[in-house]
Length: 442
Image 1 (tube, rainbow, N blue to C red):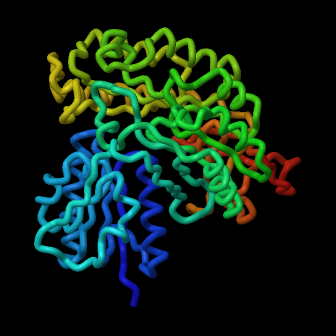
Image 2: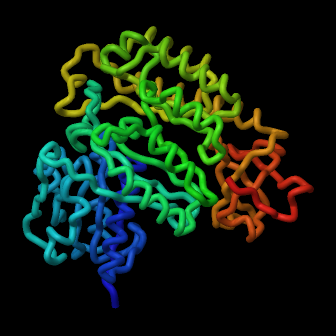
């Protein structure tokens, strides 16, 4: 009987991409992949360190794995492992700690998976390598959407962020290799490729190319697929990228653009590379190109020095912007960041209250955006799951759509007319003139 491996990911889409690659390595060695909730011989936890909660969750997950199998070999990797290897090695039951440079070299570092008295630490300084660790991940049970890592690391110095410490300097996959891997994923049947990285918009500078240059090569490839950019900094969303996205059907009509604060003073303290005027102009420019564009926004509440007035400024700024949804993060103090030594700490309860207020605003924004799609036809990529007679998928502009389950729709694009919004889903029907299921291609 093959040994069983369970994997769990904390954090961003980039981490999911790398966890999937680790899983593929285990499969290639003859291991079986099981749920993290099941008894396994080996547990691999790929961590995040953006918030204190992620660190705490890592420790809880290690304890959970050991309850399922006290003799299991426990591997902790990822950003938390890179920044705090000694701390993790002291967690009872952990056998190996792998840093950012080591996570995709697991089998070259570990000779066996026998339980150890002391944890082995394999963590090298992230800035001592220019190596790019290629990876991609997919939805759990189908070949609909793949997260494709094309960039890693970050050269920015945001005062709240530990990612440059954990991931190192910005580096990219070689352009021809990107195209080769991209073609391979399309040939495997993936219909949506989500380009991921720590700072995707920074792609390619060491090769003298830009993200726009890469996208132009991608959209010229043959096949039925579309491209979604996972997230892009506002100062890196160029007019060229915006024009290409608005005019080419292979580009998803959706951007996720971090803001972090709508207060000019807080934005300055965060050491972001734009101001609120620039950000507002960018959002309105996108909507001028196409009102149907979906726009997501990252925002942090409770940053040091954020008074009630400054939070209200952020709230009103976001309320007035034509955006689709928010990803709201509650600030937490991270070691070795400039922000941790700033004055003006915000009470924890105030941070949580502000987070809840913005999440409620996000719900309203999302519902309004979904309502604006009623009686419109959207290009939807359907997934494989039959959920009580319904099949779901995402539109190009990142609207979640539900339709009566029809097997021919699985992993296909279809034009769907939105009838209503129900429980944060748009419910739709394929128009009568398209019910022959001559499904549309991108």
